[in-house]
Length: 130
Image (cartoon, rainbow, N blue to C red; front, top):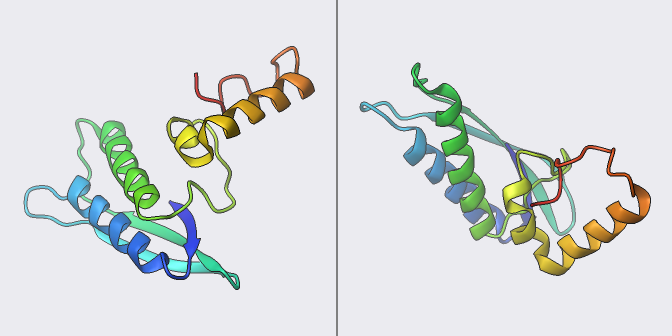
């Protein structure tokens, strides 16, 4: 996962994401290993990359990841992080887009999409929430 935040928010974002991943992926007394590093630094803040190793739920591995992703994304947004640093917002992040850019931001994106892609052939259903 990746995000970005201001320098003052970065420690809180780190703690929130780490806690969310440890809670959502911890099982049978095994805690996940949550690793993180700053990949880009700017005068106002930095990006934070998070890698996690966890005991896999063999019966429901995709649901396990989606639950962890949801918990971590909710946590980082609540802590002041941004939905993504530079890997873009796509289908994985669509549920959080309006929370990130607000209703007006979504309306502007819809208007741009309509103007530039009136036939709706470029990545339909990928970015904008329903």
